[in-house]
Image 1 (tube, helix red, strand yellow):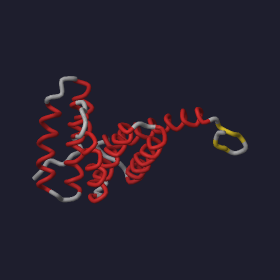
Image 2 (cartoon, rainbow, N blue to C red):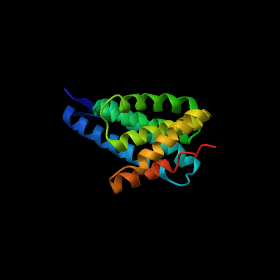
Image 3 (cartoon, rainbow, N blue to C red):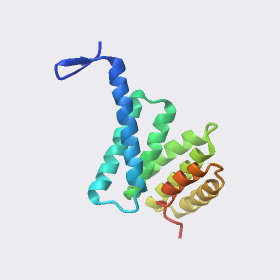
Length: 162
């Protein structure tokens, strides 16, 4: 038995397909906004909503890895918005997941960058400096040019430690 939408019943497979589509679209929109050099207040709000929507949809149809990446996005977005406490909670959760398994180098670099950004928002300068330096080194060592470019788009938003 599927869920009801209006007066129609939606098959579980169809609902899962659309839920996955929304997870991907919301995730991509939030990252695009996060990478923007400047955002309006409305775009900040859209970025926050898109990140939370992505996390919600991945919680329904995603793997543990999808959910960890969505949590990483939440950490980054909350940091960009200056929400240090929530940014740290999300960043630590995703960092723990990424670093407790055999993760690709780009993902480890992202985890350090997001944790550095969250630490900056939380005003933890020591933690920020530590993870910023690690993220910078890991990002520079990425062998794949596309991975370096994508990482750089995110890393540029992380404040340089003072």
